[in-house]
Amino acid sequence: MNFLRREFGTIIVVTTVTVLIWAWAAGETRTQQDVFARLEFRAPTSGQYIVDTDTQQVSISIEGSRLAIQKAIQLLEKPLDLPIGVDGVPGDPGQHFVDLVSVLRQHDELRSTGATITGSSPTTAQLSVDELVTARADVRLTLPNTQLAGDAIVDPGSVTLTMPASLRDSRTGTFVVDAVGTTSLLSQLTPGREHEIEIALRPPEGIDLDRDRVTIEPSKVVAKFTIQSQISETTLDSVRLQLSCPHEVLEEFDVDLNPTNYQDVTVRASRDVISAIESGEMVVIGFVHLSSNDCESSITSKPVTYFMAMDRRELALTGGVSVDVERNDDSMPDIGITVSRAANGTP
Image (cartoon, rainbow, N blue to C red):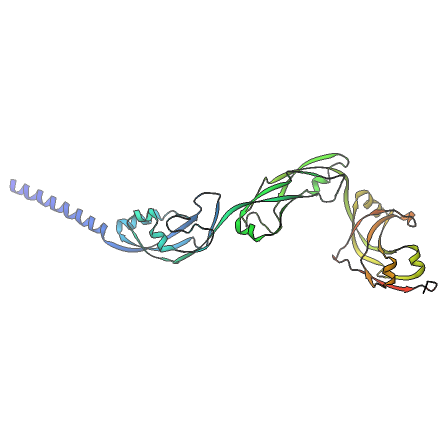
């Protein structure tokens, strides 16, 4: 009976050892597997560099024991952290082609699994590293449809731009950011009183804050100003063109203008002037100024010198209000001029 017990015990021990050896051997049997992984190239210190890559997901071929491969798969279930300047990842600013197999073989966490990296698809990744730098930008204030009494004060008058060094180096001249007041707010402000408003800044022309990774600090400024008058506009079917020159020139020369009016124009002036134009109390005239030398040299064209809103009842008198005029097709062609000696003029 004791013999049977001893034999049974021996069988139990042998079986247990055999199972353990088989389990160990199964775990240590080398195998190969392809695993998808997400790579995250990043700057080691946040805020100093910008890192971009054309490769974020790769297929990695790994080899090792079943246990090592299982550990590697578990590790690669989350994005693999690849700081620049570490474990073979380039850290200098510029464009780089990264050997992914070499970088992955040096990765401490992957190495600790015991698995070996044998290949990847793609085999390389293009990496762009750019340093973040700062630049000074002047603030340009624009208050649409508003005429000021005196100069406006902008605080601060300059701000700091943070941007990639490559963007800064590609630009020439001084950076300018715009503080543009909204017409809806400005139209509610009373002329003759000092106003203080906060205005959000717009980036320099050609720069998009999100796309180009640019920040403005501070992002807003305070503008102090006094409004003299609000600017408005109206559209006219035509504006008459008129010759302006010394009286003695008209005695010596006959001058004809062609055309004698501008069609379909927009006139901008203070609200009270626009109101007078729309009511018919004032009329807009474009003046083409000619000097004696212009006539002597028989010039053939010249741009309109200035536009005035004149009191319709006093057109023969001097004076008037200067206004801005634009043609609605965005063209302001020169005026054709025909000059000839007057019949009673000096030969």
